[in-house]
Each structure stands twice: as C-alpha cells, then as structure tokens.
Image (cartoon, rainbow, N blue to C red):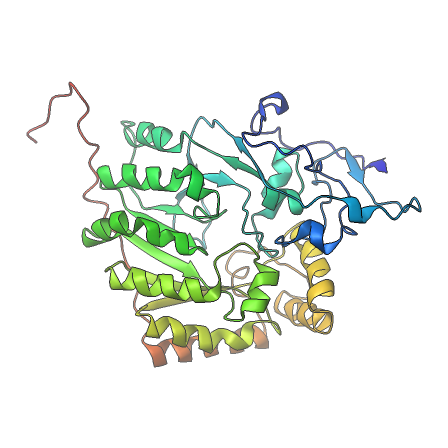
Length: 392
C-alpha cells in the first residue's frame, strides 16, 4: 500500500537513477520502502534493522497491509548488492565545532556491518533509499577514490591537514575484502606523506598494518577501534556483521604491537544496555597495549529513533522503556538533542556519572595519553613522470 506523504525530495540524488547499475545485482532484492517489519527472521538473518521504511525525502511512503495470505515464509534471504559510484570529488569537508577534523574520506555509502544505532543511516535517504535495511544491503562503492584523492592532493591550493576515514561508514566493512578501495587510498596517502586517522569496527584493519606502521613511524597515522560491548550475543544482535568483540580486542593488540598509535572508542554507550561494560572494555584495551580511550553517547537523529525502538522491542523488550527513559533524561526530555557540545555526551546526573566513571577508569589503566598529533609538515606530492624535481 502506498500513500502520498506530501513530501518532495529536498536534495537530488548524487547521480541519476538510470546510472545505478549494481555490479552484483540480486533480482530478489526488495525495493526501498518495501514493508519488512513482519519479515521472518530467516529472511533478515545477519541484519540489524527490522524494517525498511521509505526515506524522508520520498513522495510516496509504504505501509504493510494484511491481505490474509500468510506467505511471508516464502520471502528469500535479504542479500547485499553493490553499485559502483563515480563521484567528482572524494574529500568531504565539515565545520563542526565538536569534531577534531575538517576533512574526511568515505570509500563507501551504506555499511554492511548493519549496526542498528548507526548515525549514518539517515544519509541513505539522499539516495532515494531507506535508512533501514537498504542502508546495510544496498551499498555503493567508489572504485576511483584513490585517483580522485591524488588529483585533489595535487591541487595548487591544497593545504595539508589530517584526513579522517571511518567517520560516516566503515572503510573496512566486508566488501572492502573484494574492492580494496581503502588499501588503495592508504597507498596514496603514504606516497604523499599525508597524515590520516582511522576509526573502524573491523579487524580487517590489521591487513594494512604494513602501510600503517610505516606511516606511524613518521607520525602520519593513528587508529581507533570501536568496541561497543564484550558480550558476543549482544554484539551479534546489535552490530551483526561487524567483527566480534574478541577480534576487535585482538586487532587493538596487533596495532599497538606494531607501533601504531591506537585508541579504543567505546561507542555508542547505551544507558541501561551496555554502559555497565565501560570499565571492562577499558581494562581489556589497556591489557592490549592501548594508551588512549574515548566514548560517545548513543545518538538517535531522524529515522534512527524509530529503527532503534523497533530493535529494542524485539531484542530487549524488558529493558526498552528503561533505556529510552534514561536516554531522554540525558537529552533534555527528548530522544535526541543535536546541540553542539551536548550531542556526544548528553547532560544531567547520569551523563555526569558516566563521565566520572570514564575518567576514573582512564586514570587507573593509563588511558589518559593526550590526543596524538599527526605531522602535516612532511606532506609532499611525489614527482610525476617528466616533472622536474625542485632543489628548494
């Protein structure tokens, strides 16, 4: 069933629909907006979201209607498909006052990790797709990212500052094993002596230790691994295709042993669900050789609020009301407050207590090292063929 929502797209898609040709099409893949809330578990196995509601810019919204035929068991498993995208630029700029970088790279749109709480989910609405199951199954890759990066780094007006990767979708999500876009980007950054900081939930980052350790010796690389929980069962339900907690802790140990400045990112902290693990995660990270830590409170902007509520009702029905109640206490009575300076930490007694617990654990385990400053002074575009080298 469809209905006119009266909405009109606020932004045009990044490229025409006619150009969206999946490299690995799956004819059984369901269109954006297809009602999947009643989809049986076997059909969405390994997925985080429960539904696939239309994006907020779409003119039509879809709603499930019971026609009396119980044929949902015939639905095939939801599979991922990847579309090659050809952007004109690869560096994204931001001016956010509470983010310590002004430029980033996203090799992929969408993320197969399927973390139900992912704050990047609403960006799929710009593509005319759902922030629900579409976000984790209809993916976009940027195979020309490395070439675009070289072009932008060679621009005469380019001024070097650290590039952040993994700030929107994970550069080491499962499809990176095939596409290797992140590996190519790192090769360019190493050749140009350009500093980079990485955030990931995947142990696949250890594949690139050879490049990262060489860059780290020159003060050009640092890595943060996000660990949400040490409970494998909770992790499987909440972030189904990300590396297991034990794999992530092992990755922290390997990165640290390779001399790469490494931090543990406890994100997101969800009150009454995983906040009790704060000290355990920090203890494990310290034993892995990590010297720095950070945390971020759960954020529920736009469509994520409903998606997370659905997930709670199915996976933690006994805690759902309590989780949302405490969260609203930390957000001024709302599910989310986007105000600068508050959106990452929240406010009120519970937020204060969380901050104090983190500070005490950080001091206890030596995770108070100041933010590692990357060196921008070494940046040099390598000489191209036929280009005369400068003596100055």
